[in-house]
Image 1 (cartoon, one colour):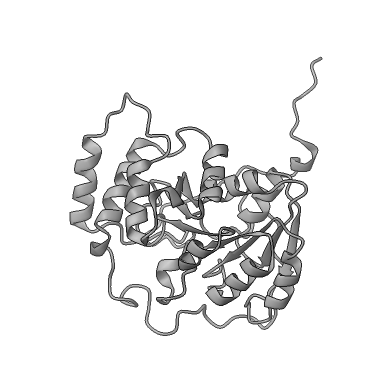
Image 2: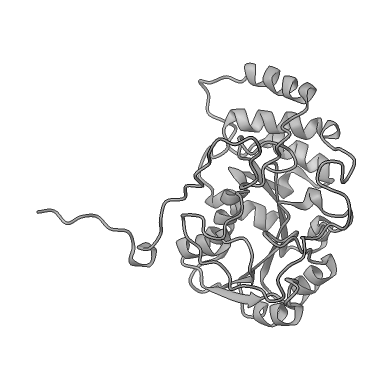
Length: 302
């Protein structure tokens, strides 16, 4: 009798990722924007999609969307790479820049997908525990980063909401040889001036992940992007799957980015006024969730 196929031994305990979305009046489990697109923007998206050819493959590198994103951030289009959600960006970063001899440093507890994709790419993980207030332990992170290939910091952190200062990220970049990725999937909900995108121009080893799934109401389109130096972007383009972002998602995202002014409510109008921090937290941080395909510890996608 033929032998039953099995996964690699190091992946044998993984389970399929199924968030088990169920009908509800208000859905909070995936951190989606419950308000959707404004009517005018939605109409523009629908009109643009009606003209998208279905019989042609997508533009492989999403050039028009990269141009629009570059204009939004004031960076060159060739300093942006687009992916099928932020998840593809994270996976490709580890695929291209991680591996058995390039450990990943994370600040736990944080988004569990980092460790999941590290496992898939056979990248060792070094966890640096956050402080009791869930802030990054800067001294410990700097120490661990000196022997790392990659460092990922999430700001605002998923799930605690803590920010990482650009000054600390700059110290990481200056004092280590590691590639530092700042995950700003929730950056639109943070204070102005907290983004690390301005660091990219002067630091080849800093890159910033952003997504259109949250504040931009495009979770269904699955569009994430990374802003980085040419070596990082070119490396990401080299390892990505072909045509990973379909024509419809590219076009919808371009329209939304170009009409983004219509999406911005006054800060606090829809997400609550007051300091941009998480609610009162327990005194001691729990252990980081074990990364599993079933979504343990995974609060929403990117």
